Length: 558
Image 1 (cartoon, helix red, strand yellow):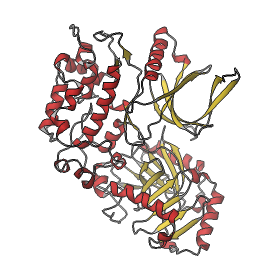
Image 2 (spheres, one colour):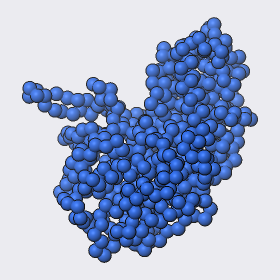
Image 3 (cartoon, helix red, strand yellow):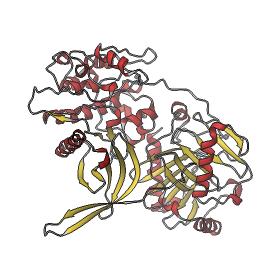
Image 4 (tube, helix red, strand yellow):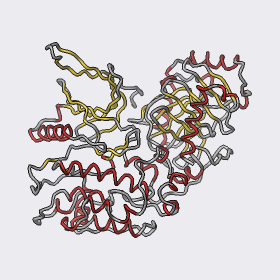
């Protein structure tokens, strides 16, 4: 039987000595799971004293059974602690208790390039240049300190809230005692290992192994390990026929993926290659590009040609041909300035995963929500008629570490946005809708649905109970409104619903709901709800600033 959804809520304590010898404690609130590895779990944690939010890599001492694993962890801590660079994840602290070792690191809110490429499928040449330049800056720094990373891959390239690239995970890194020393250990992720690490020939180059991993990953993850190693050893790769790649990009990749490391491009040579010098390179990308390609205005700042250039292969990732999917809607045609346009829907079948926090103000109980609804009815502000009342999210539960995000709509329907990009929404006691990865909606009865949906239906029922949905107050009619996408910024959680609503939940617990006709519902920090037109909010600085913030993000995604 599936376990009941619950949110981890435990305290981590760091014991330390004050200068006067007294014992003191630093305490951290453990939050959501950020990732899992072979020996560690990574959580978001918040310092109870300073309120600073960090990432905590937690290694159970029970996994450190051999001297080798202990020495490996000590090396990782020692190396990472010694590195300080704009494009390297900042090491904050390390401590231990009886059960675990805790490594505190800078939190990168926007996940990794791996998640970005899963959403975007491919990225533009200017974005490639931007990320590549930042990565090379990090590599030049660690190589100057005789450090080899030895596990460069998209999953270890993080993006912070300023859209800066950060090199992380030094679990396989090593430091040379002197320039020219060789490390013969075979380590790293198979698809990214340089051929000289696998080869028995007496190569004298060492830093070039990291440079190999900067190039494209030409080897399918579905291949057998031996086949992958053979192709790497023979330097076998090709460019996909169905994707147009510039000659400069092909030349750069071909000169990085060279069997003899002494003939491989150096980091400085990569920076001076025509692919990197044909136009100005932005310092960072725009936050909207976590979701969709750069707009024309942004691209025009750097290269007119880039607006029409083909999308390139980047950094270790074999591109995937975008799927054109049919989209079943409720009859509404999205406006061209919608945050997630029809074009974006057709090129991105996968769920956006950049936001993992729930909506804080929506932790209030069901009685509070009923009072808020009463406030709306009695409010003197312009109101929506009952039949045209906006549907938006009133409660949310973040369980993305295992299943996805559960939520309750203002029409009292409960739904889940699953990690596999599918959705399910309760209609009433008898019916639910299932939305597949192509956003095709299918209606089912609870007593008659495909058996492969058993787990998801079971989870819907559990989330319905967990979020306190009043099943006696659900709609009698089938609703096709569901949460389709979401995005996290430093200031807010943005939700895009299938009815065209854009909802922003700010860190101060206020909420703004913008309909496709630009009518606005605002919920203040106390949960008091009011309705407005665009003209009316011009005299309300609080609402206007929040509205402008949402519009800025929307315009960046056009």
